[in-house]
Image (cartoon, rainbow, N blue to C red; front, side):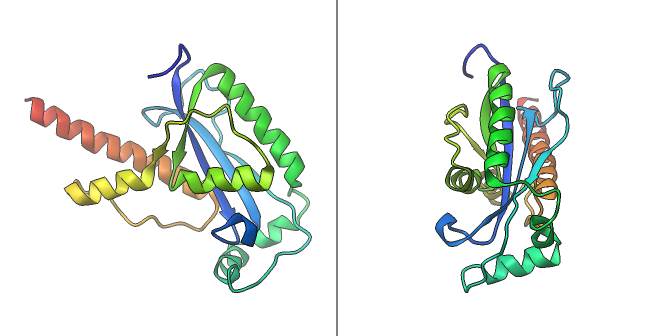
Length: 192
């Protein structure tokens, strides 16, 4: 599809206190890399979903943030932003940039996820990362969900989540593989 480097999906997810970066805070960032089939290839040395909880001194509460702050208080993320394992935005940006630079040296990285432009917007805004190493072609899982619902292939479901990046990324990757399986099976039947 692109250069001589293998095409890979870079799965991204963020957890925030608002929909718009100027109105909220970035709480957590997660990412994983898979092949275009959703599987982690053998040559990927990091098979884990990478996560960063962003350190905060305070969480702002206002009408724009009330719902998300409540959700993230109940799931423990707000407490984690005050904990010893949280990292500052500068540290997270440096680490994320390092991982992405390493992966981009080996692969053509296509951003992927649920509403992946939302995640990219937050990472660019709050971590001040340009993300120039990412390919402009993206895979938005929401588009595939709409398609599956429209053609009633049975793979579409309303995403459920505990609003933590690791859960969302695992769910998205698994759902992507399910959708691929359904579409492949349909294509094979039509060729017969």
